[in-house]
Length: 422
Picture (cartoon, rainbow, N blue to C red):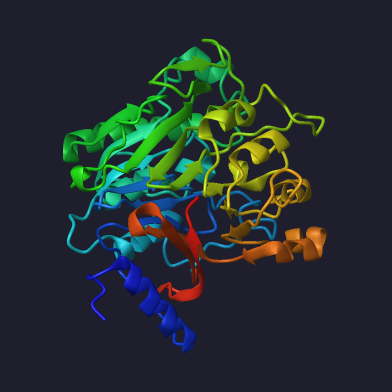
C-alpha cells in the first residue's frame, strides 16, 4: 500500500495490520493530516503539532526542577522514558522522530500558555549555561536545540509589568514558590540571544485574532484550517471580529493560572481546545461564574477534543464549562497524584451535563490517584503514554493513538477510532 495515495486508505491499512498483533510505529505524517502529539516526559505539559501543510507548533515545554523533593517523590511522575536526557531534550528527541522529514528542522511556532515550571521550565543549581549566557530549562533548552521562528507567550506588561523591579519584589510571585521571576529573567536572555542568532520573533498572544498563528507552507490548500485566539492575560474574545474584554485591571494580579493563553484549532468540522491552567471552581467547591472557564466556554463552543484545564485539578472543569464545550474526547496532561480530582472525573463523565459518549485519555496516572479514586478510573481509555490525535479526511475524521512513553522508539500501544468530527 502506498501511504501517499490516501490518508483514508492508509488508516484502513494500518488498522488491518494492528489486527495481526504486530508492533507498529505511527505511520508518517502526510499532507492533509493534522497531528497533535501530547508528549509525556513526567515533568509537565508539552504538545507538538503538525498542521495540514506541515507547519509546526509546540505548546508548552514543562520542566520541573529535580531539586524539589516533591518532583522526585512518589507524589509526582518519574522522568520518562529514562534519565539519560532532560525533559526538554526528550521533547526535542520526540519532535525529531515525528517532524515531517521533507521539511526544515525547525518549529514555526512555540506557544507558552503561562509562566509556571510545568509549562515553560524553572532554573536551579543543576542547570547548564547556554552559549547565550542563559540557563537551560524548558522552552529555553528546546529553543537552543531546535530553532523556533516565532515564540508566543503572555508578554510582560499586563496586568503587571514583570520587568518592573518593584512588581517583581512586591506583587507578582511574592513568595515565588515556582521560582518564576528568576526563570523569567533567563527566559528574556534566551529571547534576546535567539533573536540575534536565528531571528526568533517574540509576541504576546493577540486575543480575538485568527491571523497570528497561520499555515506557513500551503495555506491556500487548506482554507478550512484556522486557529482562533480565545484568551490571554484574563482578556476574553467576545466571539465576533477580533474584539475582546478584560477581566482584570492594570495593576491587579489574580495569580498566574487565570492568565493562561487559550486557543481553539479548527480543521473542517473538527475542533480542538487547549487553555493551560484556567479554572472555574471557587474556594468553596462551587461553580464560579466569574472565573475564566465560565467566560471562555461560550466562545469556545462545542468541540471534538479538549485538554483538561489545570491537568484536571479539582478547581477546574466546572459544570457550566463542561456542559457548554461538551467534547467527545478529553485529554489529561498529568504529572501528579493530585490529578484528576474525583469530583472533576464525575463532572466530565456526567451524562446529565451533556448526553452521549465521551472518551478520556491521560498521559499518566499515579498510584496515589488509583488508591483514592479506585475503579472509577476504569472509565479512562488509557492511563499512560503519549497521546496522538490524527485528524484526516479534510477534518471529518480522526483517530487517537497511544504511544509507549517508556520506550525511546515510541511504538503504538493502542489505537482508537475512527471518530467522526461533529
